[in-house]
Image (cartoon, rainbow, N blue to C red; front, side, top):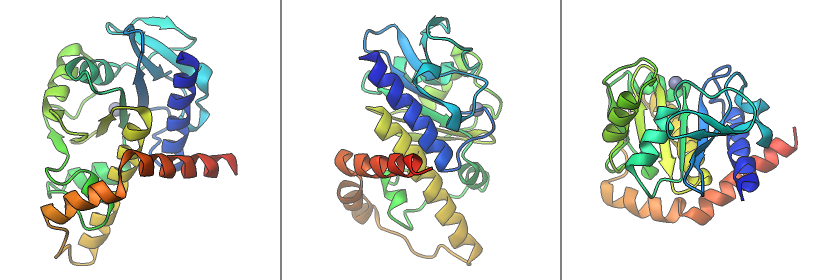
Length: 230
Ligand SMILES: [Zn+2]
């Protein structure tokens, strides 16, 4: 069971690398341990594209490495506290997604100018502004989880993004789509817009049509095949 989960976390990391969300060795993907011991998480000191199943380690709710070889990331409370706060969250992603970081600093609301934005809007990603520094304590992890609320994504302003979902595919694809939505809006802004975008009603319909779990899985499988070609 945990072997398949470790493979999935590792593949999620490599997909995020393919999507240009790596920041040297920083950023992480996690999945809830089915036995409730903590989170299976990418090990520190490695880049996303380097991660294989053996580099995914079991980190307890208190940050102890329980299984696997490697150092845990200092920012593990991003993952443990969001999962502690929400039983239905099975996976958390944190990256320093460059377009999203740039976009968050504009203080503009995210608009569904293309398909991607409709996964988040309405109501839009949360904004975490308590600190732009690292999330090194349970208290800050808890504050981040409170800011995320029941949403699937948050901008960690001056820092990065956090996304979550019921499983690794949902959390990783949310990170991929959020970054693409921000890139599209910045392009629209550079062109003098955006002046028009989907209404809430249209966005909600598109969310159902474009991004149900089966279609997110198709996009994930496609990205996995692109990695295989390398
Ligand atoms: Zn970070």
